Image (cartoon, helix red, strand yellow):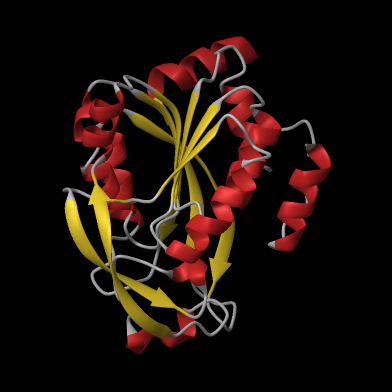
Length: 252
C-alpha cells in the first residue's frame, strides 16, 4: 500500500517522505501528533479531487474510515479508483454547503479549482496555473449535519475542507455538529484575497470557528500572487480547544 500511496501522490506533484519530528512543519504530522492519544475513527475529506489527500491521511491513520466527497464526475471516478487501495474508504458524489438541494457547479481547466462559486475574472493574477472557466454542471448538495444524521455519525475526528471558497458555507451546514463539539480537528484552505465571486476570506472562517471553541494551530503552504508580493491563500489547521489542551498537557 505504501508504494501505491507514493505513486499516487507523485502523480499529483506530492512526495511522501519522513517529516522532521517537530511541530509546525507538516500539517499531517501535526494532526497525527495532536490526536496521538485518541483512536481516530472518522476522517471527512471534502473536496477530495482524485484522492491525493486521502492517501496522505491513510499514511498517518491506517485504521481510520475516510469518507471523501467529490461532486465533479471525472474526479469522482479517479477518487473511486484510488479508494480501492485506501480502504476503509467511501467516496460520495456530493458537494457540501449551508443547505441541501442542487446547485450550479463551475468547472475550470484546472479541476482542483472547480467550485460552487464563479471565478472572479478581474482577479486573474491570483489564479493557479492560468485556470479558466469551462462549463457549468448541476450537482447534488448536502449539509454536513444532514449527511451525518442520515449516516448516524455522531463524531468526526478530522474534517478536511478544500472546496475553493465554499469552506464557510460547508461549516455553516455543520452548525449542529460544531455546537455539540462533535468535530475535533478542522484542516481547510483559507483565502486572503477574493479569487471567486463572493468568496469568504480568512477572517470570516476564523470568526466562525473561534466562536465554536476552535483555536488556530498554524498556517501551511502559503500561496502568494504571481509576483510573490501578496498572500493569497493558505491551509489552516484549527483544533477544538479541549483537544488542544489535552495535547498541550501531554507535551508539558
